[in-house]
Length: 243
Image 1 (cartoon, rainbow, N blue to C red):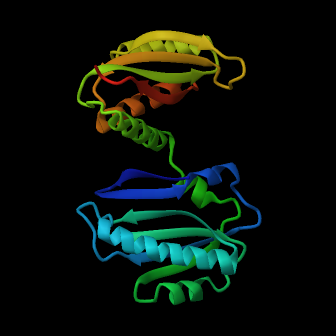
Image 2: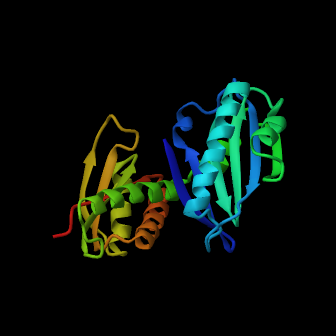
């Protein structure tokens, strides 16, 4: 499944898209080589990301290159980045042989600015550079929930009760976090225990607010950092359709 998230790097916004399911199999011992190709995009928006028309052209190019690399190198496409008018493509393969020749043949040397490869048997670039951190995972989750709400005709600007979920190793950790979150206008709804879960003590807190991306990201940062103080995790949020 391909997911994307957006981060801020200095004064530049970065859009990262990756095949998120590779987390289950990374690293793949049979594909120890990281391959990359950097392309200069022709038509970008104010964020330095591809415009819709440019995206269509790039999709065609990427598909042709990916199929050729699968066929000739047994490679897998793991992700890509867009930043300041550049598109970075990343693959893992059993070998780097013929990679540069294939890229130049499929795309053309005028379109590609940088082609390279390095051994990365532990898939560190995928796991620690491309794969989203806890906050960016929440950005992805929030986008899916918001898309579902919009599809149901929800008015996102309406304030409603939103539940936020946190997991802890012990009940006492959950209680301490609940007390701290009370100072940030969260109300404790319940603490439940599930012995089959690693973080089996689930704290549910609520807050009344509209469904706004920036607000949700700010709350996610607060909840993640607060949970981490007690070795816990933030597991996301849910809400109903505003009445």
